Length: 329
Ligand code: ASP
Image (cartoon, rainbow, N blue to C red; front, top):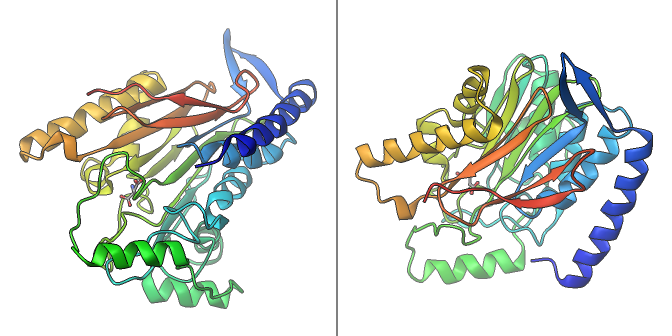
């Protein structure tokens, strides 16, 4: 958790960037009578603030949404204090840090890696899969070998803190992910750039102390992330098994296509999570899901199952603020 001094420093930084951008780059355009707000970037959880600030550097200088989202999510990936993404992420039950990530651009190009070890920036490996291979997804050792062939460095991602926590966990070895307690939390980010193009990125170390080889929703296009450049983009966080089950982010985007606002679409998708859990007698208090979305007009919205999920918004109108998502329960 950032302390107050970090927070003030960050606020000053984002405030100055915002003033600069408001005058020079950002604009609110009129598009068939409706305001289009661009650029805009939104991302999950409080680490979204720093990630958005990084993405904004690209968006506010007419850069591509794809470059913005990659640069943005690399911030928590590279921060060893963030214990649910990239370097310093909590390990699986065997003590191995395995990472999941995916990326999608305005042309429906996609790239993804799952169960990737030893690489600090899985999102950049996902992008390399997208741009340099005939495939869309690489997993495990194959993903690692590909990353090394592309010049990524092999590193130890297990920090002393995460190792200590894992050893403590081993004493009981009970896999019981807690709602809103930080033993997971993904950074998902979606952005609309000045050219009106959408992209998204999603990256995580997944559920802490998961089985080795477990893959969540975050690297699955359509589950943890989806972008349709005609409609909008969405990304998710929370219990990945539940999101995969109902193709979460694809559902959110399709609901926006039918005319729902980003918030309404996220809400409806969350209702489907509840319906599916009820069918299986899965206790709702054991699940947390958060969806966030933007549409082509630059409108944003979110919804979650349990209270406690927030997301960061940076646009010409909102100066990189954390917003509490509404919850169904
Ligand atoms: N969705 C991630 C997973 O299931 C975890 C999270 O976002 O909390 O791996």
